Length: 259
Ligand code: CIR
Image (cartoon, rainbow, N blue to C red):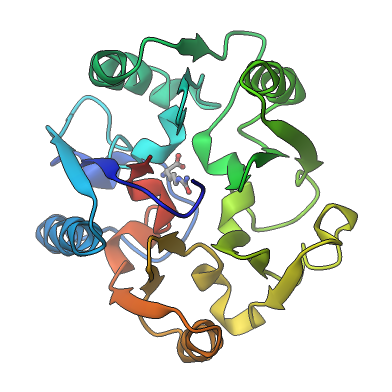
């Protein structure tokens, strides 16, 4: 289930997109280009065989295109997060009606717990829960408890001292078959000792956030070494230009909730 999906939820960027949070220093995003890139992303999801629910842009929440951060969805239910920055907390109620129409089993991360979905990496029936500037230990333990009730195991992994990692999934992706793509800062971690870890070269670290969906892998453009690495594992790649989302600190995975 962690690489096989039938549905996805996306939300196109709103006209206020450039007012979202950014540390990238890559300049202000071009809104029209961002819309185009988002359409290409949505097409790519569809070509992987998933039904895509497209939510309306939400101008009150400039970061709301990064839907992955507000919910964790698995086959038995949904965990609504409590985003780690004030400006994003309202995004949860924007999406909950849709998710409540799909699942009855809804849990919530509540204060003092905070969590961004970008910190949660599912690997088969196990979840790695990144403790970051956005997800705190209280949120991590709440999630671990909800997951345990549904039969999933989990580990907390502290990334607060790793410079440049906004979320856990900024530095790691699961390709299936026990293969992880991992940045240098995470590769030797004891929690990944039982996996086949493949190093993402330092000059392509943005590509560590890629997405395996069914028989394909979505990968940001201009990462030739990572492209070769993934192809050598036998996966088919769909390259997507993510330039405008990268300017707002967003990666490929954060643009959708896949389930
Ligand atoms: C933020 O700082 O919250 C947004 N500008 C970017 C969020 C990216 N989300 C993700 O990687 N899961």
